[in-house]
Image (cartoon, rainbow, N blue to C red; front, side, top):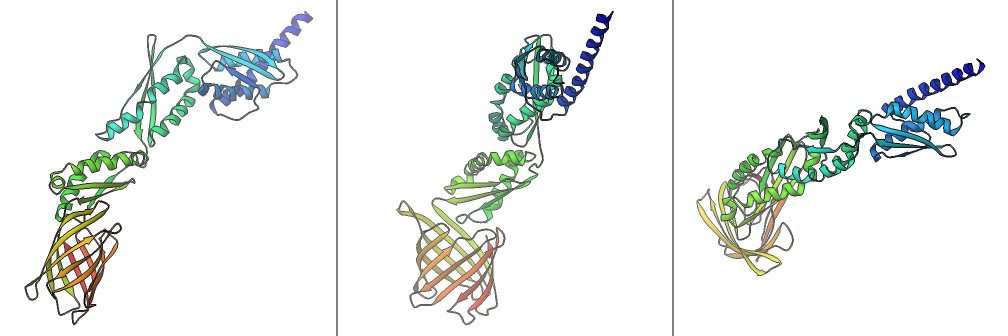
Length: 423
């Protein structure tokens, strides 16, 4: 009788310990915490092993140290069998205060992975497919030999692991997992949804110093319609594909009849944000064509003028861009024409330096010009062979409107304010 009573007390104590550590382990599985490491895990993939180790370390830490290590291993085995479904589990004492827990799948179940592509338009679709193509074999390797039942306790760890590998390949896209079982087949479907912030609009801004401004609006409208597939994409993902977006925009502009006829080429610069900016500089390799209308204020010598610039690129040295040009200017106050004929070269980016013959006073002028850029200041200046000075400081307010403060030593009213419409 005494022996039977002692056995009952021992079993009762065993189940009390099991119940206590089972509760602790369950809490750890679902509410992850750091604990004293004294358990070695074998037979699990890394993403499940880290979760199991945290849980079983916490269990082992809470065990009474008065019990023998084999006894603790038996408790550890019982607890693990209750928590970690899908695996056959054994436990053994490996050394001082170290327990080895071995996992083996109850059933080898093959997995297939279906990575679904979101409904996005070309060319973004091709970029997404390139990004997502390496993910399928990676996910299949993660699931190899993993029982379906074990996903019940490791689903958050699996989600986190897949988010980790997709974050680098697909920044800004949130993966969603769906697992199905039909007969002996197991399938995981991975779909993607864009995360905020997303691209809400794209603002194309074609600019050119060699083509008339009237062509800029046509290119802008075409590019705005063509950039519609970028709307709704994650900003982070478009930032990753800035180079591809630039190349796509350049290819599109270069394929337009306007660009081909003018022997032009495009250089794009995409700035990803919710309102993304797509700047495209289009410059002709052979010609420069510009026209303007100007209105003067602050001077009685001039009221308005119309101007036309025609240039032809020449190559005297392959590394130095040069242009021969002619300008015709019609002064609307007296309805008289003047002409300029010149040659200029580009010593550095955005600057032209050269000389021109001006029929207004029949003399040579040295001229330095800075190319106008949107929302930036610019200038031009001329010095005649007799030392007269003519120049202006300007601001490109819009694609079509500029303002200049001009100084002309030849006029009675030397200072004037000028508004130009770039045609």
